View 1: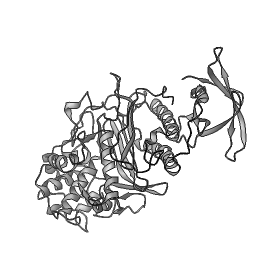
View 2: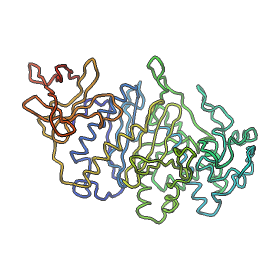
View 3: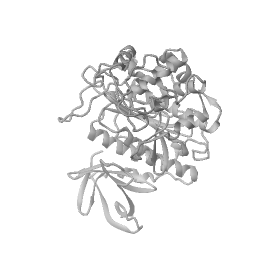
View 4: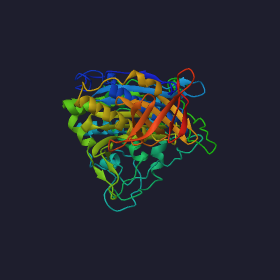
Length: 486
């Protein structure tokens, strides 16, 4: 496999738990299968172009299949100026993914009969003073977890405003409640609310009698072995294991460094830091609990309850479980959460029926981790399904074709050539979907290949040309050349 076009790559393959039938021989390592390897080459070529054209400093990704972290990598840099590579163990702000841990804490307290979903928040937080200016029911625990409570989006502080990002303390949030009013009647509209989830963290504290950080560490993170997850960004790792964040790209095509921040009282909604490896453990636990039943950190039926849709907005486009966003991808239910904070974007997504999950962490604003996850799910999902359905079918691509692989360039754009299903394929870059952009080729004679049409017939010729020393240096199609650049 040719990875020369990918900068600063770090690879790790971790076995978090036994996997059932995902490898070539009903339980082997799927990354050894040629179908997985060609999928990896395609994904990396696509991601390399995305990072280059969007000037993304670093990306860390991981793929969980049936309780196993089968593949995890870092691309680019955690600290760009120092050229420190991003890895699967690099720490990033995961921002709103924090809400999943807070929601689990609330549901643990529900299962222990210390609160109920229909309870008004004011029954548990005596200092709750948000003025109810709309008729109808009160702000409830369930409304907070489904973002249908009617609360405003934020606390009464400008903490998303740079350059200082003045996140309030818990005490400042409480003090500001008296200045705030409800935005909508309860259970009428979806309104994403960091204020609501910050209050959910206080619900956990009040019901359990334990400080939020201590509770999450002892009741969730430690039992799951998530030692690299923090309820607020760890200042001791700034400039080291914690990646430098970079702002959105400005009109000059530059990404300034984003300031270091901590979410303080907003931490239950947006403060956590974690790594790909740790969030993979979190995803693996969910698949394990759903498969085995019983109780581990949470009762299995409670997790199923959290994954089910509890709120559908009137436009039928927004669905939410208890803490989890719920959506459909290619007709299958996906649950998870994304995160966006100063200098960082991230997503954790699970497809329960496929037992497939992905983690994407980026140290740059203004780019989409969900798009990267979508490409991971489609490219690797197809490969894993093929490996599962027919473990022994694949054969290694002909080594003789490797010399054609690489990135080619013309004034009209880039073309990546890779070995695919025993022959060659081309993909124009950049592209939103490399599978849709793929053109499959079949060798005609020597250095001449022809495009395979959708109906199976052969189309135009792709003619590869060699330098005086015999190396492939360009190809032409329709008489026009693209030069091999790497």
